[in-house]
Image (cartoon, rainbow, N blue to C red; front, top):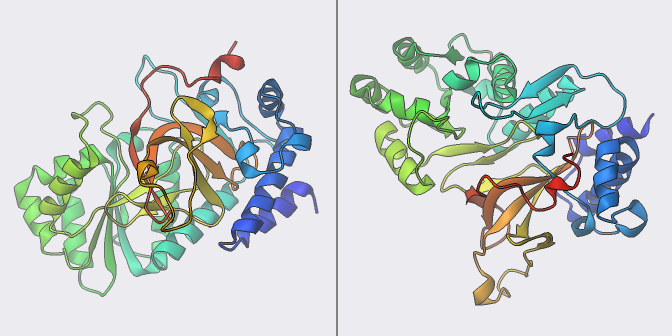
Length: 349
């Protein structure tokens, strides 16, 4: 068995064990340093080689902008699909070459079912207009996989045909399954503007889960999460709004069941870096021992995604976040501005 296959096997069976996660993360770093020329060049520019990286906090995180300017791949496996982020005609999009779609499908299902329940417990209605207009969206690919494994004749994607979607949602209410409405933010808001349809959906509120995937895509004014979720909970008649945290450049996802608190699968971890120093992390303290002045500090989100074995598992994003009080989850509170993240220009020539 190759090192790549051994690492994949290990992450598939990974349990929530902090020590084992750190061991595996260091193994993945060593593998990607050896097999990813771009990542190795970036790590070398920072003086970060496997010989002097003995803790997870010392692993270099690749700025996410590299996915716009370079092909970020580890090893020599041909990609089965290239996912691409959304963007305007004036912006450069990120591209993620995925070499193992079966792994992506399996781990995304496993993550959802561990945090919720088997997909066969749901009728899934996907309101993802901006994503459906493209044919290389990782979100659409994942939800399509979910729909297949829901084994529901009602599940499906809907673009502008929201009346048909609502009729199918009402028809699906004849059994005991839950109804999962997955929608891009502006699509959910557009749906609520049709009061007749919104009223019908509210009759399903006792079994309805509304999951927003973020993004106004230039269709509406951006708003803070609390304002958005207040509108959505009132409009759909539900107590909380669920959310998905994922991105084109990652292979894994986190989920929030309400109040914007995201939790991650065992093969994924978030570290918050200092806003003005991308190589220093916000300190961790045991529960009940955190100094008052350090509570709820905002930091830049670095993501470890061990499933991203054929690309890069250590990504410095442009999201801003805070830890929850008990460090079991995190919230996304904003974004850096459009300026390049410090250090990113080291290799962008």
